[in-house]
Image 1: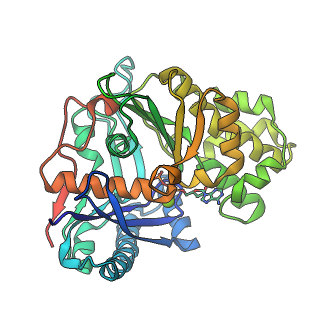
Image 2 (image 1 turned 120 degrees about the vertical axis):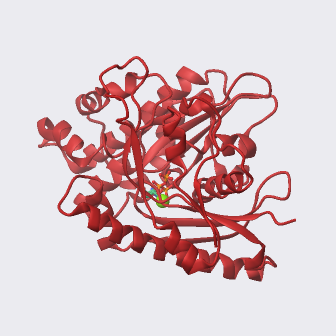
Length: 381
Ligand SMILES: Nc1ncnc2c1ncn2[C@@H]1O[C@H](COP(=O)(O)OP(=O)(O)OP(=O)(O)O)[C@@H](O)[C@H]1O
Ligand SMILES: [Mg+2]
């Protein structure tokens, strides 16, 4: 049975591209190969710059898209080599799902907010799927988010349907929290007990990474050790949480458009004398707090929170989540069959499969779209 797909994810953390080769022929998806390539410092800086308006950005965005496609192609090549060693030749791979690099995410406002003009919503992932198809010789599926948004949805999060298939349980509500640059929560009810919910909680690693880079020169706070060495600044936390996004009901999604370094700079203006490690401690609490609120608001009965994404390795952040949610167990996705950095990439392999089979990939109960839609555009080999 030809049921192998590659998924490529490069998220808002801007750390690099994660790839998986997945076999979907069994009951649960089986990861046959994994590969990762970190972005170079200059490429990460350019992608970060492209998240804000800038000089000659169309040209720079096109070049960055080409460069991303070459990173993706090297990840695919590594996956195919490992897959071949596992007995899966390239000829058995049906397609590559390539998320692209989000540089703008402007979803429709909530239905209660009439201030947004019609047709103002869009989401933009830099990518060059044609070049990727050319470089890999494989069909590529890309631009997964736009169709959901065209149908009135948020275009995000798209992983909850996959989370449901992999982590959902028949008799219990399970929460899945992806801690990428932005955090997103999936609430997976027990079979027959309602619809899947999912939304972006707030920032995950994005602001912690930026603060850590600025003050320590490291791209992230390994294990959260630096944050753990600092103290909470309650007034700063209150100021950070004083943002309309947190009061919105789902469906909702966000990105660096809102939670930018400029946004953080404004919030920090009144706290310039604070020690950097205390700010990092507070930013970590700021990452945890909306997730705790989200679980308490939408999954009161849940006894299990599965964490994935790179933030799952931030032990201090995980401790803060567990402290805020004593009623449930916080566990790494590793214990539930998929290591943290493979979950989102595998979701895009699954979304590519859905597209190739002509099946919907979104959940209207999550994104708010008018209905189920086949997501993505297919670029033949
Ligand atoms: N050992 C670690 N300790 C603390 N944080 C870590 C560690 N390893 C990874 N991270 C964090 O995880 C981030 C990468 O996570 P991930 O790749 O899941 O995010 P992403 O690329 O934004 O993905 P997405 O947007 O799809 O969720 C890093 O930028 C860093 O903040
Ligand atoms: Mg990443």
